[in-house]
Length: 156
Image 1 (cartoon, rainbow, N blue to C red):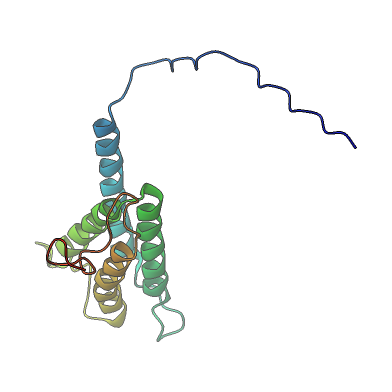
Image 2 (cartoon, rainbow, N blue to C red; image 1 turned 120 degrees about the vertical axis):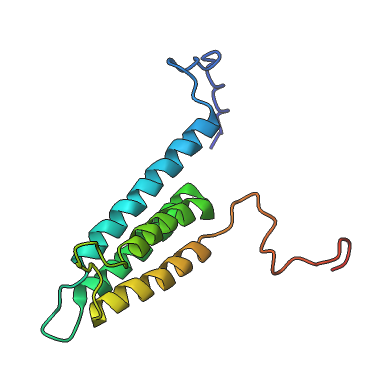
């Protein structure tokens, strides 16, 4: 059986320049973080008003499902952006909305009442967000965790 040499690749010339304005990387990153911040605000507002659905009389199913979705969204966005900062921006926005809604409204209304669903959603939300941000892998160029690095340069 004789082997035939591979045909040489055809030269197509230089790659054409993309059309339209060039957007700097900083502007793209700023737009990404702005969108993630708004997404965090929306997640916080929706979750604050929809966390009180119960399964039966004892299980706050909406609060539990909201926490699972919150973890999945924040952690997933951090992994997609390959940045803990992206996850942290979304988590910060959720925390701002949730903290603002903990206070009593001027008319005396409460968003978060003293019930099981509210406690699970608020306290669990902060714990879930902390875990979601911390579990995002470090950026590819990072030199590893600061906890694992040697405190003295040159020592191992």
